Image 1 (cartoon, one colour):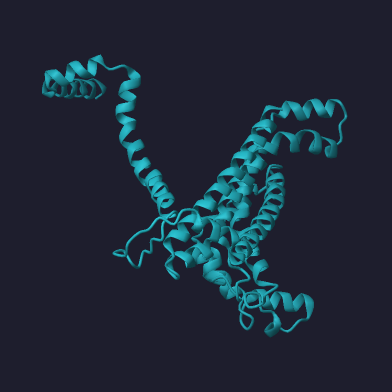
Image 2 (spheres, rainbow, N blue to C red; image 1 turned 45 degrees about the vertical axis):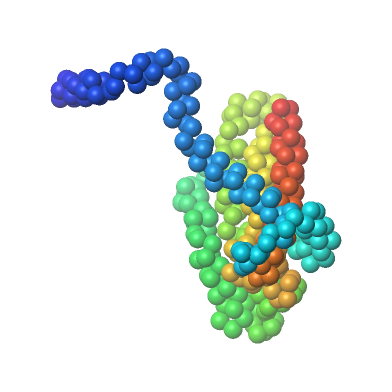
Length: 322
């Protein structure tokens, strides 16, 4: 069977070689391995540039104009930096940025602490740890639409399980527990949902970091009679820190762009309490139809995220080199 298969492959190769024009064969033979690699990679790179770079360049161009998407035939005028000036001086936009920063800070803090704690416990490899790991990962596998609708039902004051649980613990009537309708509670309702959904993601990254620590380091620490607490702070945390920082980077970038969960749960309300930057951008672009100003806002957000991420990556590289 192996001999017949190899002979068939050789015959197919010979047929392909005979069918290849002589001029093309000479050109291929003259190419280096790097050139052949570029021949295969170039179409993908061109496609990625067309999908990613062109929209960015187009948005930068629109940010200096008065273009409106609902008036495609209107004359497009160059307005200079007025769109950027209006974005940077708009109190509503600054309020949306503060709301976004509030979400990013608390979600990252909670997800990192809970995720690392779960990873540390699972790394102990207790009996049934594989089952519990799979169970913990379920929220991350769900669609945001499913999670949003599921938690809207849980937050219902009359029939929601969340209101009944809080009422059972505190004695507050369920009708008064308005998680999505309260100005003070609505932001925390979204933070709870995002933490529930994405803590498993942080846990996986932290678990990879914990399991990358060699066992002989702990063995040497035990020989030196280091306590478990000392081993945790002197070995576990420092060696897992690059993975923790990597998880913070990924979740920080994603939470800065938070849109779907807020839209599904509160739509930015009540009032504008939970209106994050992405919702403000959407309303500017597709409700006010100020496409030029929305493009300027998008570029400001891009520069902010790119700049902060660049600084953070440099700090991460320093930690890895220690």
